[in-house]
Image 1: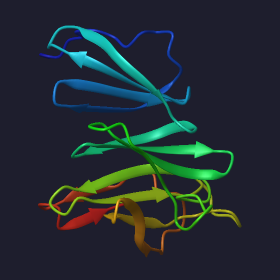
Image 2 (image 1 turned 90 degrees about the vertical axis):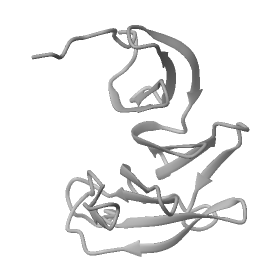
Image 3 (image 1 turned 120 degrees about the vertical axis):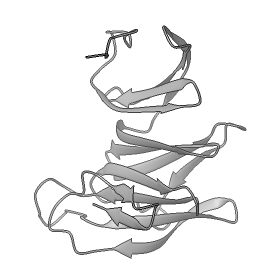
Image 4 (image 1 turned 180 degrees about the vertical axis):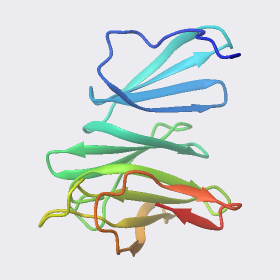
Length: 171
């Protein structure tokens, strides 16, 4: 009761896996490796822009001017960041040439008070190439760096959420 459909994302899109709503804009992304941005006036979605992601997008998060997308690429799981103010792009890598996660990035969460990004990846089942770890990312000297790893999960990390005033991260 009280819920109704105002508008729909164009049906020509592939499967949508992530939606973020911020500051009167709707961001959608999915299996077509594209992130679409729509203006929303309360009744209609108006297409504004579209950017190419490096692979299928599974999750998105926004903090400050940065849009983060967790993607699956041929090389592994990758987090791509865009600075929406100046258009700069960043690939978050554990080290030179090593992707953000070995398999996929299923979940992103931001601690807004510190501006730190958390990412979770892995496979749905545990295996030799699984990467069930939460990585902690921080902006340092103009680049995003992995500053910590949280290990101990038995399978893929499908969701991350802060609770109790951003004091605890639940996975």
